Image 1: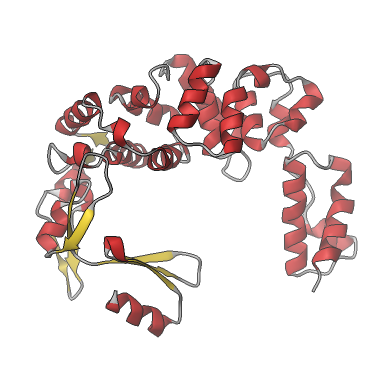
Image 2 (image 1 turned 90 degrees about the vertical axis):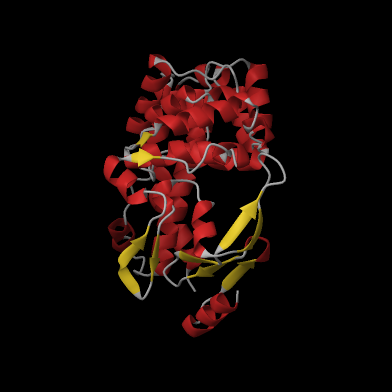
Amino acid sequence: MAFAGRLARRLGIPRREHPRFGTATLELRDGRTLDIAMARGETYEYSGALPRVHPAGIAEDLDRRDFTINAMAWRLEDRARVHDPHGGLSDLRRGLVRMLHAASPEDDPTRAFRAVLYANRLGFRIEPATRRWIRRAVGAGAVERISGDRLRREVARILAEPHRARAVSMLASLGLSAALHPSLRDDARVRARLRRAERLAGSPAAGGSWLAYLLVWAADLTAEQKRHLARRLNLPRRAARALERSPGTLRGVRGRDARALSPDEALAAAALGVSGAAGATERDAKIRGRDLVAAGVAPGPALGRALEATRQARRLGRISAGEELAFAIAAAKDLEP
């Protein structure tokens, strides 16, 4: 904590301390964050609990890590030598995600979801013993002991990254999707829908959030099953409502009614093949900065904020394509200093 405080003062930036975990977060001027952590050990009161941490040496600190590939360290004054007690460099070269010991997914079952996250992100394989340990922990009910908020965060991280179909297959093969809800499937139709949603989204800015992919994945669940899944993930009210009313509501959408859908629902509806819904995923504003400049709006911060407000209004269906320019001009005037 003392080091984090001195560094924050020297850089002239704010910091947030997390004494329970022996960490601090520095907020850099470019929007990124820098985490500072003491070397620490940890113990768990029960499976799925948050750890109790205590100061420790570097060996014990690395022993508590999730995987071999993040259980390595550099001594800053001697970066030519990597401290690698668990073979992380070898696993990096071989493309393996490997846990450090058999009790790892029982101590912290969220590690099982992070194994899927990193394997999917990096194109790695989850090492066979690690797969067995995860399945054993799932079978022992470890995932059931994770709070809804923690579980939702892990699922959201996985579904927020590309190759969702592959990630869902990994989750299913490890028993993790069944631990979320036994009726969540991994079959050719589900994977095709997820891939279609990714194609429709095109880029993170053009489509919905991770929730859209959850809607697609859970589309075949019954209403009661979706309510159970929403409770298990402790979804916020709006997200829970979107999940519970799909796919029946989505499949009942026709034509202009698609404009009433949220971006997540619109993307899910289009991926599910709802007639007329695909257009709702493409209602981003077409107006550009040069259009506003031509209309007499001076370049500057107000112009950029007006464009963003127009795009948001368009995605939410509050304005039509023909109303974009007038809306943006009015927004720019309101935002002028």
